[in-house]
Length: 279
Image (tube, rainbow, N blue to C red; front, side):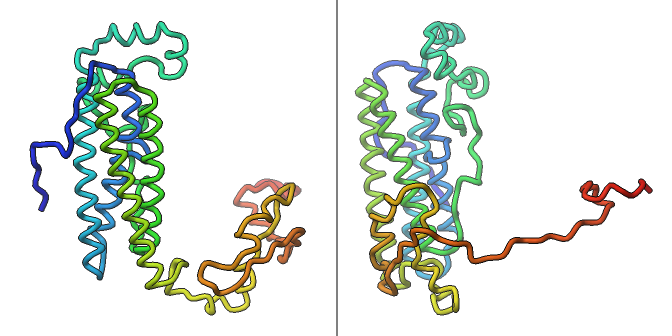
């Protein structure tokens, strides 16, 4: 059961209308790494979580918080759009730089949403469920969550530098702080799960099940010009689980065969054998 509370998690105010900033904020609302993505990702992971209840409870807590962040961004975008008009769209386009980068005010804010937030990115690409990860494997999912929060916080920080509106910045600082905590949270969950299950996903397919292929689990193949990649711990260090040492292969050779595929039936129209007359 979900219950809506009218008060926002944090105060949302603006110093004045700014339709261009409203368009930019659409990215952290409905873009690939926006609040809609983490909201749906954490909720679906929570809905589908099996076993250990503390992980399900944590996912539902954070997923529900993200619903609130979506509402906060919609409120922020709406306030930034207060008073916007079609004339503002034309005025914005008179600045060649702005027109080239943004194309003026987002016309959908005027036409589609009536000066409200939209489930789209800053360029109008609709949000879609393909952005989310909910695999049923807790460690794999938590790593995806850390990635999502890292990208999301990065984008909010960039937008923070794009505005001088101190009231908007105050709201963004709250979001940046929460995104920082969420990164800590996923790091803690990842560490705990790695200690329980090991660092490789899935733990249910152990290294010994790879049989003769285990050797390939430790080789770094140099497949581009230069050998700078040999300087990293991924090339000369030990595996994080201590199971072996990495080997740098400076001049790797292919180990497989040249594939030779059979010529398909003429009815498939591959035109590989056109000496016969058409039937």
